[in-house]
Amino acid sequence: MHSDQLQLSSQRWMTAALTAFAQGPESHDFAVHHAGIAAEHMLKAYLASLHPALIAERDFDSLLHATGHGTHASVPASRAKTIGLVDAHDRVHKILRTQMPVAKQALGPVANARNGVAHSGVYDVAEVQLVFTTCLRLIDPLLTELKIDADRYWGSYRPLHDRLIEERVEATRIRLEGRLARARAAFEERYGHLNERERALVLAAVTQQGTTLANEHSVLRTCPACSSDGWLTGDLNLGSLRGVAGPKAVVVFISPYIFDCSACGLELVDEELYELGDDFTDEVVLDDPPEDFTWDPIEWLYLEDV
Image (tube, rainbow, N blue to C red; front, side):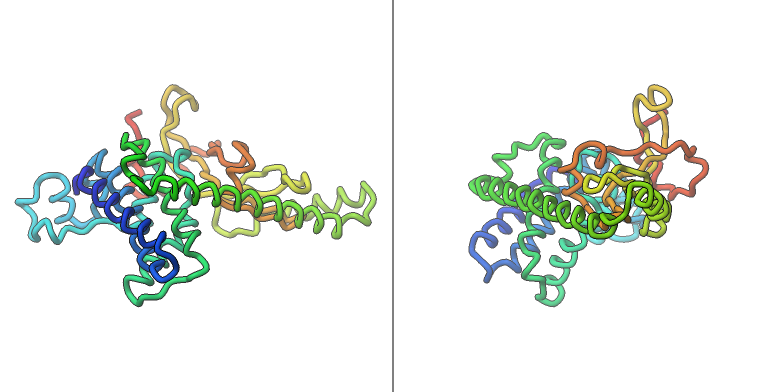
């Protein structure tokens, strides 16, 4: 549960992953598996740098080992339980929030690929590069937070890392432009025959239907394709933000991960939102007081003293 040990482990797994990726398709199963482990270990390295207990499962024996009281545990340290990839990302995201460019929803392919290879030797060949570059994007900001030299971490594979990231960014931009173009065409086809007054009435009815995503939290944003009101949806979080309702205040906010427009059918996620700028990626503070919501007690672990 030591940060330094996890950092070194992450680097070793990532070097093996990059080696396998560079060898070609016959080694891509190793690549996605090893990259997933490298990403998980780096997430845990960051959490452990704050306190080892942050990577422990809610298991008393594991917490005893993590807090330096392992002599009272009923199992040895080798059997201490730690959280998995998704929970590690969730905990890190609650702390770093806007520094983390990878939304929770993007971890599905990574977890599926790693677990598929580990348990049955199966993975989605079409998602290899997506999985691999998601891991790279996840690790990069953690290197900065942990003050790890990126050139040392990536080693001789730094050029491959840079090329894969550039290709991912370019692919995102192309995908975004394609979705915007299709949405504009759909909007014209749906409403182009209406006069200005009729169009306004129809769009008011369409946009008032609300978000199509259930059990989530959304705010209105102007659609970049058709300029109608669309819904920016995100995870509901509890946090301490400086400069909000006082020097340090506990607030409820949304961390966006998807935009949905009922008028033109545009749907954008994750990296595509970052291409649109701060209005689609910045956290949105709600007026509701924290007391109006039911929170898991562990949420409070991530708050600064107020």
